[in-house]
Image 1 (cartoon, helix red, strand yellow):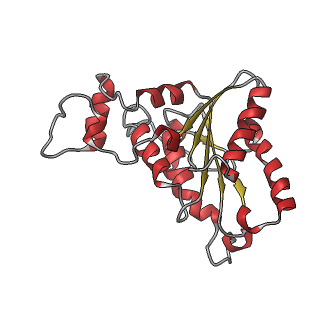
Image 2: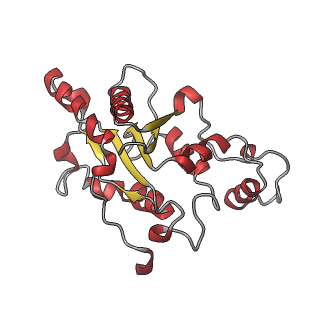
Amino acid sequence: MADKKVLIVYAHQSTGSFNAAAKDMAETVLTTQGCKVEVSDLYAMKFKASATAADITGDVKDAEHFQYGEETMLAWKEGRLSAITEEHRKLSEAEVVIFQFPMYWFTVPAIMKGWLDRVLTLGFAYTSEKRYSQGIFKDKKAMLSFTTGSHESMFSANGINGDMNVTLWPLQNGILHYCGFQVLAPQIFWAPPHITSEARKHAGGMAHTAARASGRNATYLHPFGQL
C-alpha cells in the first residue's frame, strides 16, 4: 500500500460525526503507511449536486436540446469544464478511491450522487467501448465505506430492508464497475447511533480496514464480454 495515491470522497455535514471519525482514521492510517491521501470534503467544498449547463465554460453546442453527457464530453475535450477539472485531476492520479458517507434512502447522499454525475464525465470516465472490465479506470480500485441507520439483520436476504448486496448493486456495478473500477468489498458500519459506546468504540477501530483497502478482495462483477 505504500506510495499509493488515495482519494477519499467524503460526504457528511458534521465534523463530529461517526463518518468524520472513520474518514479521519482512514486518512491517518493510510498516511502512516506511506500513501499520499487527498480528501474531497463535499459539504466543505459546497460541491454542487446538480448536473447542469453551468458546469460548462462558454457556449454549449445545442442549448435548445441540451444533452448533459454529450455537452460535457465536448467541453472536457476542449478544457471547458473548469468547475470539475480539479476533481478530474484527483481521480486521474488516484489508485484507490474510498467513498465515505452515511446511507440516505438506500443510496449515497445527493451531494455525493452529484459528484458521481458530474465528475464521471462521458469520455473522461467511460465510453460505449470502454466500460466494465475494459473500462477506463480498470487499473483503479474503489470501495464504499458507509454508515447505516438500521441493524445488519435488517439488511439480510430475509430482512425487511432486503439484501445489502442487492441494494449496493446500482452503485458498485452500475456506476463504479461500469467505469472500470475494481470494486472492493464494502466497509459497512451498522447503525452506529443504536449501539453502545463500547461497541461504537470497537466499530471505530474497523475504520482501519478502509485504510487497508488494497488488501480487500474485489467483489465479483461480470466482465464486459458477458454482456
